[in-house]
Length: 435
Image (tube, rainbow, N blue to C red; front, side):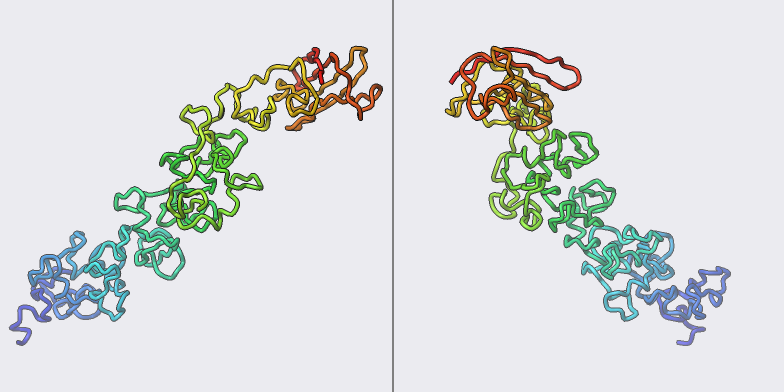
């Protein structure tokens, strides 16, 4: 049928008279949307997006492309160079088959071709929201992990081995609002691995490899910072700031030879879930084979309790001491460490063999002098900050008195204690030595 008798000269489903859309002067001959030199009424692809005008009838599917507007921007698809309004031009959505035809390209296989799909890779992040690296309105040049596949076509945007859709920790269908480590970078773009065990923080059950799962350290609140040092508990090896590592206070017994608060070998022995295998009931079970200790039963586990034994003395003031010599450290032992013994028996029976003075546990720089009844010095000792003092064993160290290779005789001895803390005055007293 000759054009002069044809109401749709190019047979694209749009009446020739309706192709007067650019100048809108009643003359379709001067309207060329894509500027290809062919007026729309003779152009089978009016917007030059690679999709024939007649094939843009995809919303209503009534044979009329003029009422189909996928992105609802007021411009029907056949005149819209970005049909789905995702920031990627329709012609640039030809990325799977790459044959100049965007209609047969469906990256995520959901049955919706990319040029009509607002989430081309089906990862839960809208294509237009994948413009996060350059942020210029063009998602095609954003490739967070540098693997050559732009984010909007990449099912694992940060290349951490975890699909973007699986980084939706709060299960609301939107991976963009999940930020496990609160660093301002959503998990699906964050491949951070704080403890270097090969498991990204976003799926690591124990981000600092201290043997205590993050959920126990913070109850799901990654902002919890018990000691207020700016390091959240799940990344802090000493959550309560008491001078003892969380690992040591946990009760797990896991090895830590260098005392850095990180389990020895955890960088290679934490399986797929980031929790040290030897502390799980079975590899990657995520279930601990020990109970995290709460010595005083106050509801605060020791690693977050500044007074582990609840005796009123802060853990940091007694954790290196054992004032009563019972092999239970003072921070776990309710003892009266303010007393100076009035007797001891250095007879090598393993009981009360040295003159241990609990009161000095808080005075690491103390000095102790001991004299016999005649005023001769038999013992002279300066601790100089040691955590394990050399307590008097009943032998003389006096320079002018008895030989230090022989024990002093049974009797009463006079002592002087210098606290050397800058404020407390020296005290004196008597101690009876029996054998």
